[in-house]
Length: 161
Image (cartoon, rainbow, N blue to C red; front, side, top):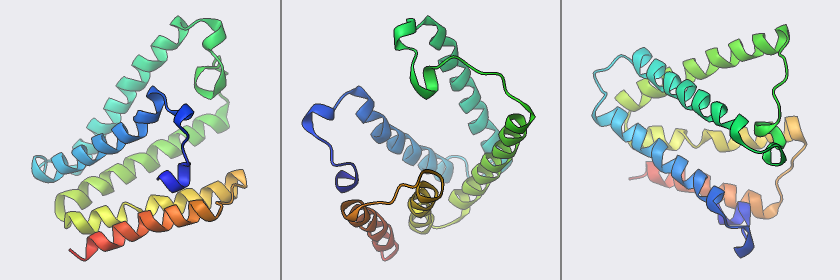
């Protein structure tokens, strides 16, 4: 990750810890799914996960109006805009995709070998590169490609144990 992000000492702030906390919580969720939720129906696990997303999202969104206008800039904090039919259809399609993906992940972590499932979980790296190129014309530089290669190699090496 250091090769990809190339952080500087002055760049560190509390937000820099969020991806690390997210990764730790994701790993904990997958361990709990494997050890404590093996007999739960995957649809129930997925619905609980997505309900938690909605609850946290509503709580966070309700705090936004409390921020001063000078702090309300950027994608997340900007004033909300009305959505048309195409946006609602996109939201419904994306909801179906995330629901399907979380059901699949629950089934995988309940039944598959953890090392194998964890290694396939690294597929997001490749998709992040593809979508970055397709949607944002972001081509990774040599250092980023090396970092991505190390992450994928670590996933492949974990299969060997």
